[in-house]
Amino acid sequence: MTMLSYAGKTPLIDPTAFVAPGARLIGDIEIGAEASIWYNCVLRGDVNAIRIGARSNIQDGSVIHVDSPKPGHEAGHPTIIGEEVLIGHLAMVHGCSMGPKCPAPSTDIVGVPVRCATRPIVCCCTRRGQGPKNLRQWAVQ
Image (cartoon, rainbow, N blue to C red; front, side, top):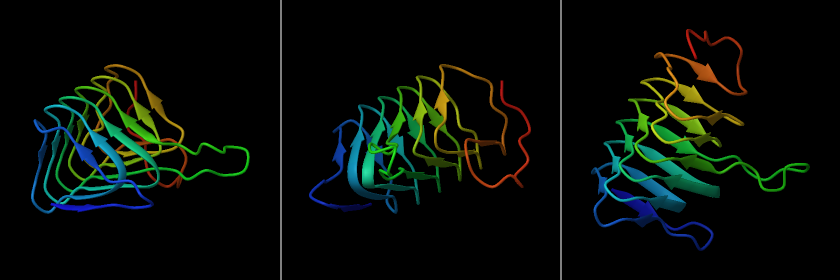
């Protein structure tokens, strides 16, 4: 695991959490009790905060980032992942909030300004939020 401070902020990891070798944690990050961050994940809290709730699972190769402050949106968008959330392999989660037990399946892209409620049904290979329109959204309920 690589853990780097950025702008005076250092990642905080609960002692009961698991962070796999090869994961990279940068900046303003807090990881809750019994959460797991798997191989080759990148969590980059450089321009805003990342919070990972208790017992959440961020699977291999996922990228968690934030959205920086902008005129008209001075706070930007932190990424808040609630308790018992499953982020599947190779998912990208950027500047959004995900409620308890909200899934982001493998290869999902979840971006600003998505706010995901508790336990929605989301199929693999979806795109939620702003971004390129050429990605096909298969199913979000």
